[in-house]
Length: 162
Image 1: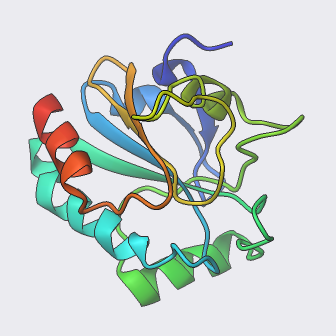
Image 2 (image 1 turned 135 degrees about the vertical axis):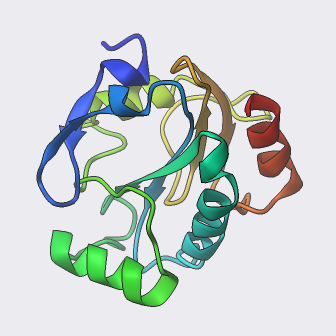
């Protein structure tokens, strides 16, 4: 298993492979996303964070997942179009992946080892869980789906790493 998120390579939504080492030195908020979820409006908050802090070395990385209620049924083009048209998403989006189960992507095997503020680690529970990664690739915080991107805990955690 990878020891850092930067040891992992995966395809972007376009299909082009990309090493997450591309984001080495940045603060990263990794989020499993879906287009047909009650939390889908969080795309707007994620984009706002990206726009607010990207010039300070911050990025959001979106990882579409269809494992929760089949709420991300689209193909890559449909996902990209949905995100752009409905939420103006400009942060990087990657190919659809599994965040739990027998086909769990190595990235999420690493991310899900991190406990949330209540001390609970393990499988992602639903869409829009957020994992904050420091500039060295260490996962520092985990925020469950109900914690919105503009929540003071998220903003303060990002600012503390910038």
